Amino acid sequence: MVDRVAGILELAARNHDGLTLTDFARLLDAPLSSLQGLVNGLVAAGYLDEQDRRYRLGGAPYLLNLMAGRHLVTQVGHRELEAVHAAAGLTTLLSVVVGQGVFYVDSCSSTPRYDYLAKNLVRRSLIRTSSGWVLMAGLTRRDLWSYLNSLAPEEYALRERFLHELQTIQETGVCAAPGISEVADGVAVAVRENGRTVAAVSVVGPHDEIQSRKDELVDLLTSHRQTWERAD
Image 1 (cartoon, rainbow, N blue to C red):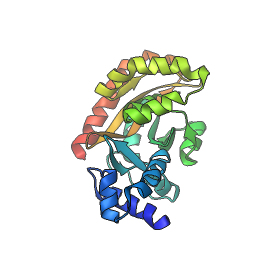
Image 2 (image 1 turned 180 degrees about the horizontal axis):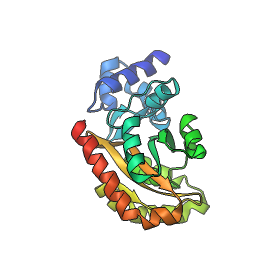
Image 3 (image 1 turned 180 degrees about the vertical axis):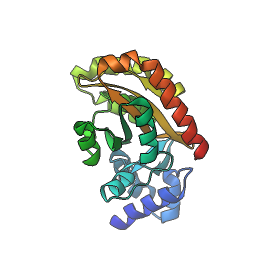
Image 4 (image 1 turned 30 degrees about the horizontal axis):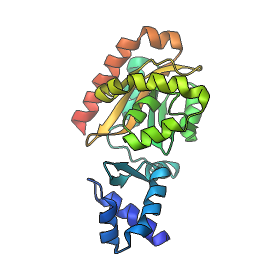
């Protein structure tokens, strides 16, 4: 069982275009029926991503590397976060989605709360953060609908608001001041590699400041994103 899981993950890591379930069965010389449950479990846990019935390595191995002190971000590192923080003067966060949660995996902030969340890799809500909305917009339809269907009744209003904004976020890669958290507000942009959203960078702060500076912060983040993409 462990050998088979390891084989699935290694194949997914080596094949950037993704593999089908049939591909896994052929390459591992294993019955298709014996792999379906394993692959579904790896998707649910965040170790594989599924898109159009093709499977790629998910975010969970990345998160484990961060826990071990190994930073594997390609486009955005701490230096890029510092540049955004210096320009915005606000807490700047790098986020990834693993399973059904958001993790802040790096931060540039003098605010102890967000520094704690990033340093300790604390799970946050997808539906209650601007970065979560950007990351949700990059999920496959199946994973997105599954997550939205799992929400508690008190989050149904947030679900409707997100669905109203979904197409715009998918087209722009931006979620601007959605006002969905009681603690703070934010502006987030998608970090995309090979056409896929792999992370989000957000600036967060008090509701009034984020709302009044929304357009400025959108321009700032999209400008920095263009710089990251050119350098990639």
